[in-house]
Image (cartoon, rainbow, N blue to C red; front, side, top):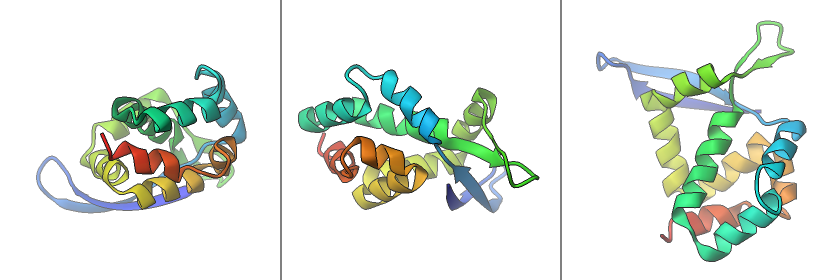
Length: 137
């Protein structure tokens, strides 16, 4: 699980600092892998090889929004839903995180490795390949 502490502004211009949580379980990575032609590892290799910036950005967006959730009060559950992800995507905090991942190769690789080590395994421990190629187009 990744905790990102993000300082952003609300709609009234007030500065706020909040913690946001991201996690993908192995089952979710498997589901993501089956949604990509040839599997996640092959998909990542292909978009890295072709340096397809649009697909790379879409993959990062998909991973961030699939991974976003709220820690349960019982400290056992991590609650995720399309509604929670959509609400998060409409905040300045999301924009700040997204731009950080889109412009900083190291931050992107670290985020992916931390969100789910299974993603790194799926790409033979080379998430930096995606991050590095995403800024070249």
